[in-house]
Length: 425
Image (cartoon, rainbow, N blue to C red; front, side, top):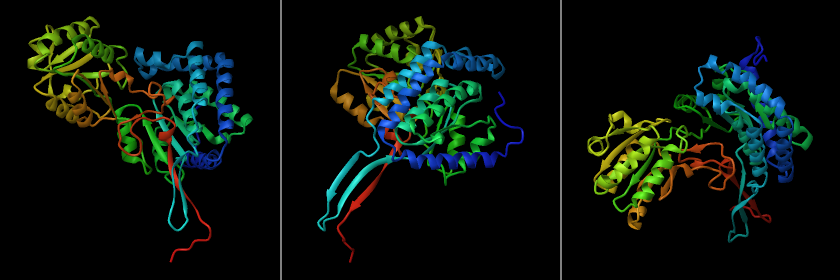
């Protein structure tokens, strides 16, 4: 497959793609929910029916993976099989069952002069989505954008270009039969990195950019974008074990938060523990982590309680490991724990284990993160778990969306004012 014509005029291609998306977004904004849901369900059927075709395209990506230096974990995320394609189809069907946010009335009131004012939810418009090499994200992002009334331009990683193209071709073919504009979902056909910069300059056609990937990508998009960016920086997530914590509960939560899946953004990367409970709780927790081959990088107080730990450096407190390493520190108070998290954390997900209601309330009020957990694993910060359906990412921003970005986070609002001939004097 030739992914980019040799004579491609990159600037013209990107502008044409964005303008087509803008035109499609105008149609999508007023499209009936029934049509969008029909597209989602028929696309799900098409994915399952064409599983062999998608897997054949995926084999091309897998064959090229060694040349891109992908890790075994990255290759596994890239791989598609009938079960995984079935899961993608199920996700589309689940999105079809979610309430359509477009047109929802957020507020309404009548002014003394008789003006009726409504505040209604509307789509953002055109989403430029840049993401890593996971083919399922191609379908998820397309589904969530279209269901929320947005056109989407997908710029996936070159490592999954064949798989993504096969998926988008099916979504586009189904769109035309269901009455959606063909340009509702477009995959950037070139793997030229310069295309990202071209798209980021097109603020007249693209309403928001959403990068999902490594920190370098996100910083580049943030620096170059001429439109708003919904950012998802790293997930340096913490669990703080308070002095009143139940030790068994703390051990289970830390083990799950760290070990259930280590390479994800809501996995625990740092453990903080109150000095009064550390002598009894830390050896129990450390033993379970070490049984999973997790390397523990400990401060001086924690190291005295954990055999075979490694001395932590200043850099460890701010590191997202995405693997079998965790930093551990003993703190003197909940205030010190909160201060540590706000200084070194990434404002993603942080948890407290405690039996003290006042401590829980202090922690949830003081920690500045998109999600704060009480007596629950950090792994629960997820759009599906929150009942939002598929998510397009977990934002560590405060504007315009924070936490899991589902359908509602891909909308904004406008005021509709109805009068009866009123004029302002």
